[in-house]
Image (tube, rainbow, N blue to C red; front, side):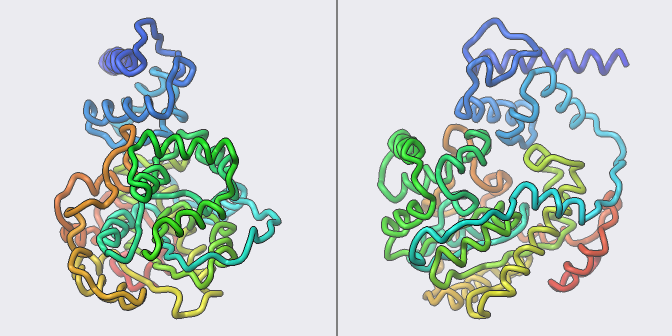
Length: 392
């Protein structure tokens, strides 16, 4: 016990030093809240970057809301550094479905205007490989494929700001898109987003502006959170004229491992392994339910494992689906400008992507069951088998 207490105290001292550096304040206590001492999402991004470098862990900005004090952060880091044996029970899918409905309730709403031009929605559960596919698609000259816009979930910019925890879960995908479209720097793009927020622009109008700016390129909207919201998926049909859907799937076992390894319990609260499996299950349930009402030519199922095994074949298949000529840049995601740099210390999408330099086919081994893998629910097993996955 003495060693653990000493370790906790050591962590607290290290964290206090990092907080002082980022906040430029000397007098700080372990029970002070980051946001109360001048912490902003931008400063939070810098703190996250320093913490990741020091502790070699993947962290996410919402963690500073879930664990707002040095004391809580030190306890969390201690838990991660000295994990005990797994004790989680098997998830109860129906309770998670009900929680998801409460988070994204069905509310009456009117279609804000005539259908906008076609768009491509890249739909998937989290940790499925959507960042890699998004960046691959960004290499095509006829596509505009920015980081997460997080627009379809919300009706206007103030609702978006609140839904993104007043900026604490906003990873600047919209700013990065505007930087590209207007050939401006981050500060200018940030001022434009602030203006849109002050005017409370509708997200429908913002989609129209983005499409006008990126024309004649086709907009690719990749935000994994859409899959958890059935209201957002319905908007995709009512707001756009014959949108196209890429449904990206991956074997559930590597998704669950990736979720827990990347500490996504900071983002979707709950027992990590349960949250990971239920995100996979409910996201794919929602996508399949939505696509069941969409014409067959508007959607395409893509397996992440197939992208890794034969990138060119899958990119040719996607180009045929989108009515585009194949371009070789699609299979070289680490070459050229793909809107991948950090903004305010934040990275949109999968941080693991940036640790590699080429498409990593070794991830194909992830479908093999490992001793530490827990049992899957029957619903997950059935769905995975329907996608053609085995070794469950």
